[in-house]
Length: 192
Image (cartoon, rainbow, N blue to C red; front, side, top):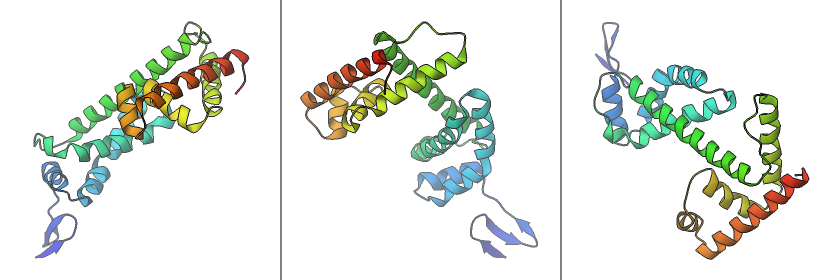
């Protein structure tokens, strides 16, 4: 019998493939190759779930990759089930929920700016509003934009932002105040 580098023993034409539980144990032990095996085995099904669960097709691939990276980070907490597909889909659903909450917080902020109207039944209007906000965000400095997005989209607190960016908390407050003012002006003027 010979040892097959990725799957185990090969002999008499029989290939012994790793179980999901074995892959997860290897991944928890730091074997990054195990992440590739896990991805190859389950990514298509996770992607199919996410494609059905979200209307934003552009986010699907990002969410799939984020789900597998999160699986790698939490491999040590895997409960040992023979098939980890339900666990992976659970991670993907949590990421999707977090992303939707972040988007909701962001849209809530936009509503506070006075530019946003009640949710329009016309998806085209929502798309235009989103494009207006994205253009306005591109019009402010990167430092202000990053601080703003960390607060409004990622849900970090001002002390967490200060720690993440290695800047004083007063600088965070200054950047957020300026970002809101500049965004409000750009959105009211209808310009980037």
